[in-house]
Image: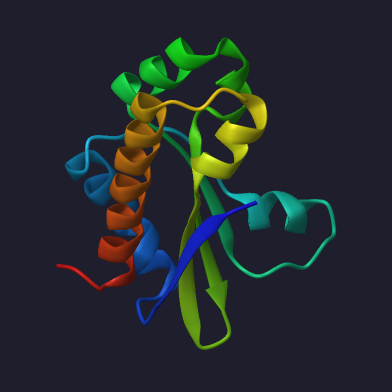
Length: 133
């Protein structure tokens, strides 16, 4: 699975606090916030701070589904914030590889669309990580 991951000097909580604003500013909405590490800890498993955000741009989702309804298994996109000992990481899954594994027929329109979506997702990660204001 292809992903885009960046390191951040922001604390886990500060980075998570920025997610709603940055996601919305880039045309996406948060559909769910999953406190993954809290769930694991409640089951007796110790894991680093980990939060999963299901994010979606309705226009992008509609276009993806218009190419092939089978891609519904990869909608929405997953944005991850992970606290590690001395830093935090933010990552997002890149849809191209998964999309292409589900939709065999490639087209210029599909390639252009996937490029646009991945550019937008990378911009979210970069802004959250502190690479862009």
